[in-house]
Structures are given as structure tokens and as C-alpha cells.
Image (cartoon, rainbow over all chains, first blue to last red; front, side, top):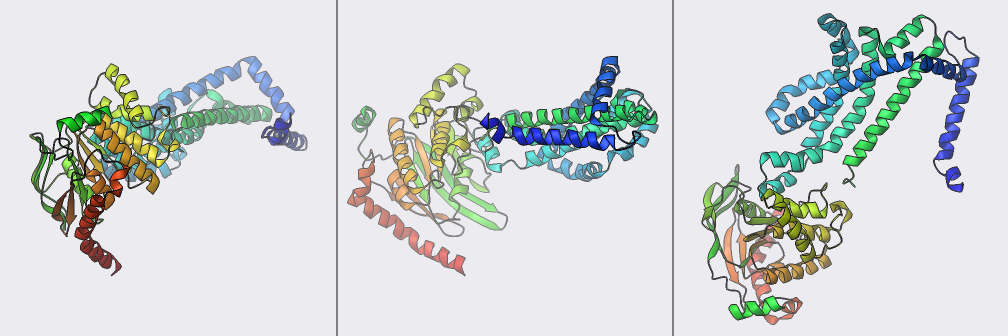
Length: 250
Length: 276
């Protein structure tokens, strides 16, 4: 009991209770068109969940997110390793990567819309574009930071190129890639919502739009809460994976 | 101790290294752009012979060793190990690095197994050999430790085990004990001598420590000059096995003074050049 009180649980619980109380108070003293209290949000969340609509929207969004994110990881990591190893290719492509990384991806959505229309593919492309750059960038930086001494050790022990990648470059770079993955989760979620705002008639993003247009503020808050919690969960997962691959780093 | 007495019966007390020549270096030269590191290096090492290479810092000892390992291309001359010309690292030659060169994401066990896996040794043989060499260097119980969890001395024991595990004909030691503290260094020197008595190999031992060179070597090669060259080769006629007692022998002191005298003028010169 003493441990719980003096540890991290007490401040955590107090902060949570205070936050909810503040939300409740603010909601009760604001017009329902702008903000609703916590209790009402929870009630509406329960209704949405019970009606089955939330599950459908959640599944739509999750499919979109996972597809785009998986593509970003499957392309971003190998491509990043390749760019780290082939200097001329990296120098040639670096300006484009930098510009794309720095560009707010939302600005590209009208272009993607006019090129590809409203299907699943353009939405996946949006999530992919939001998520790939942190993965790519961290992988390149990670793989480039490998000590030349370790490459030399591998050469001295007559490693071939394939074994050099498998035994040295990839294991060394993985924690860096995972840092990128964790950053990409947040960006990917933004991409998911943005794609659903502009390119879709389903998913959590579109549900927020619809609820907002119908002045269903409690539904808007409920859906934002769901996306927020989803983001927290995914980032925690990313951190766990990152630590798992980085346990050799002191 | 059994191994030692067998050796004494087979060979004279002093290791003359007059068996087959294992390493033959002829007219070796290396330059980095305008900077010529060394030129016209001729060097031989016999079977089971330990050749220590000393020289002032920056004289290219480490570069020479990397050229002999085939890690660096040479600009002139050649390196031949057992009639095989070295242009890239060859089988049966292992290197121990000053910076240890352990893979931080691999445990002690996996680091020691690494060289064997690269050499294509069977899995059964690897599981037999790795614990043996971990024991040999005194790391039993640390198989699952990661490098960052160990002291520098223990890390270099692991580096040594990794090199020994491939049962090399030739060991290349690149200032292996330069990065550990003085006490550990002494312990590791005698550990290495003990291990060498058990399984003698041909060894090139690069060091900037004169004492270490005299303690280890059957011969001490002194590199000097810019570009550097072999200034002198001093035969070390101290009996083996060499132990802590070797350090107290008057002959050890004489030889140390001799190598020191050969190096000193150059060292002083280098110091003043740096100071200028």
C-alpha cells in the first residue's frame, strides 16, 4: 500500500481524476455546441459501441492504418539500409527525402485525390506518405552511425556481404528504425484521419466529420478519445518493441 | 604445466622460431595520399614465433598489421601467409583489436561463436568449441552477458576467445591491452602467455609498450622514421615459459634498455615535433 501511494500510481491516478473533473466542469459550463462533459461523452461512446457503428468504423480505420503503416515499414527500412550503404544513391535522393519529410503531407492530399480518386489505394498512400519518412530517416541515420571498426571486424573474420547485413548492419540499425517506427505511429494516425476526412465515406475520421456537421458534439469527443487512446496504445507498443531491440544498449 | 614440459623436450628453451616460415612480408609500402606511412618493410615470422612490433605513436604499426591481415590494400610489396598471397583477409588468420571490436548486441557466447559461423563451422562443432574457449580465457559464467555489462579487461578476454576459437595459424594482435588499466594489462599479458604455451601459434604483436614487447616477443622489431621502416630487429633470448619471474631477470632489464635506447632518440624527436 505504501509503495502504491509513494510510487508512480498515486500522481498518475490523481492527475487522471483531476483531468476528468476539469473536463466535466468545463463541459457543464460551456454550450453543448462546442464542448460536452466527460460523463456525456462516455455515454455517447457507449451508445456508439453498442450500436455496432463504432466497431465498423474502427475496423475500417484500423485496416487503413495497418496497410499503410506496414507498407511504410516494409519499404522504409530496406530502402533506408540501402541508402545508408550506397553513398551516391543517398546523395542523389537526399534532397527529395528532405523536402518530402519537411512538407506537410496534408498539402499533397488534393493532388492525390485528383490523381487517384476516392478508393482505398489513395487513402493507403496518404498513410504511407505520413509514416514512411521517420522510418526511412532514422534507418539511414542509424545505419550510417555504425562504427567502421565493427565493419572491419566483420571483414577480418571474412564475412560476406549477406552475412555483414544479417549479423552486423541490420541488428545495429534495428533500434534506430524502431525509434522511427514510434515516431511514425503518431504521423500515421494523422494521415489516417486526414485521408478519411478528405478521401473517404467510412472510418473514424469520416465519423468525426459527420458528427461535427450534425452538431453531435458528444460523438465528436467520443471518437477523438478513441483515436487518442489508440495512438497512446500504439506508441506504447512501439516503445516496448524499441526497448526489446535496444536491450544491448547501455 | 604438462604442455610446457612437452614443449621443452621437443624444442630448446629459447623459442627460435626456425621452423617453417608462416608469414613473409616483402618490400611492403603504404601511403595515404601524400602521406607515406611506411616503405620497404621486410618481415618474417616462423611457425609458433611471436614477433613484437614497437614504434613511436603514429609510426604505422597498426596500419602495417591491417595490411598483413588484408584489411588494407598495400601500394607496394606483398604479404604471403603459408604461400598464400594476402589481398583480403584469409582463412586461419585472426585479429584481436585494440578497441575489442565486440558486437554490442551479441552476448559473450554469440561474439565468440561469430568467427566460427563466418568460417562455416558446423553447428555441432560450434557448440563444442565456444564453451571451451570461453573457459580458456576465464569467462565461464558470463556466456549470456552483453559487452556493456563487462569491464574492459573482460571484453578483451572475449575478443581473445573469439580470435582463438577459429584455431588460427596466425594471430594478429593490435595493441590488444592498450585500452585497459595497468593492472588488468599485466594480468592479461600473463594470461595470454599461459594460453600461448597451451596452444602456440604464430603471432604478430603490435604494442607501444617496450616491456610488453620484450615480455611477449621472440624478436622485437623496431619501426622508426617517416616514412617508417624497420630500424632494428632485436632477438629476445629469454627462456620460455615466461612468467612474472621473467620481469625480474637481469637479462629482461638489459633487453628492455636496449629496445628503449633504439626507440628513444626517435621518441624525443617526435615529442618535440608535436610540441612545436
